[in-house]
Length: 266
Image (cartoon, rainbow, N blue to C red):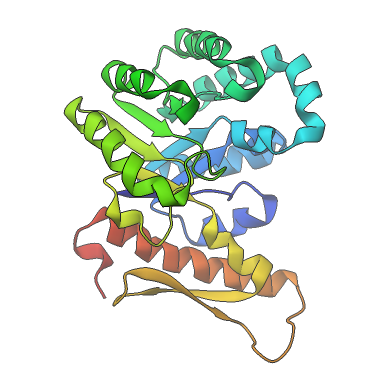
């Protein structure tokens, strides 16, 4: 299983990437398009330094930025074209569709998907949502080599229903030789499901919560301990960088373990 680390687009994290490149990296176009051109160029150089790179359309971030939704809809055509230009400029192989079904409806999403694929001459990674129905899941697994499941982070698929829904979906995908990416799916039970790939921003929690992360070779999980249990640790740039760098190194061990092979072993 490939575990892509996300949320490394923020400017302070460029220094981290220069010191430690994750095995698999996921970038969000929503945030990358807001950065200065020189920073964007520096970040995208790491696309070829990791084992694999995936580009997210930024739909999840858009939907969680309600104050910008009207502005976004008014400029949707420009956003799509900028996404196309970015994919072509950096020759992105794996990129996720703009799954904004809840804003414009699925028929419009399919039109956008077709436009992007035609302009890039590449197939995107569709992001199936439970609202699209089982038949559409079957169709997508037949039409595409690589698709994703959305709505995990937003709890469209509730945790209590994982074992009922996910194995059935993954079985259909396997039967059609289709790889599946679980968007934002990296809970402690990630190994229970036969995803080809998943992504996570959980490595960045250490900065906000002042915790130390460590990959436990016995439990095969990331374990956390507070930097201090007696007093609140004040935030400063150096502490944040050191915690984040350590976290990436430990999550890189987790990446290697999920990928399999000798490289993850203690």
